[in-house]
View (cartoon, rainbow over the protein chains, first blue to last red):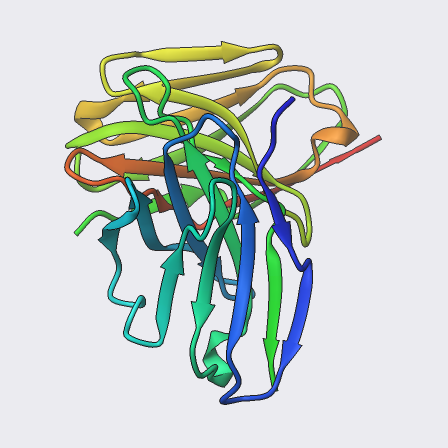
Length: 115
Length: 112
């Protein structure tokens, strides 16, 4: 069964460093998303991406964050200068988002720890 | 602003019991509602999606119902098994967005 994959599974970085989290969405999906979950808290929406542009973003997704689909398969989240409070599990998701096919499928996550 | 709440926060039951997990949301203008399972330290596995026009969806031992007007959904798990132990999350998609808004989750433990 097709699935969303994410790399790396864990990343440790120093505050102020740039990190890039990578995702390979399900191949025929058109919509891509990033969410995050700080330990012990709710899963929170960051950004959605369709047709090579951001379609929606949350107030968390400030200028330190960016997303890109550099080729036909990868979808990346870049955090330009990490802060301690960026430590969280980051989930990528994808969906077809056609009528009746709106289920969002999530990857296994990347656990980011900022020291 | 849409808020999603799940009760109970935690539930511990013996194997074989039928159980009900509750989800409530404050704004009934939703496009759909999705139930997920999350194992400790892992990703989210989609269980069921209910469109706003639907009343329920079934998959195996799972049945999810939706009462949009009252802002409620329930996930019914029949004949629970230890392998069902996980956190169950409900998420709503508001009618005018792509995003999902998640609840706080119900942590379920099924003991043998």
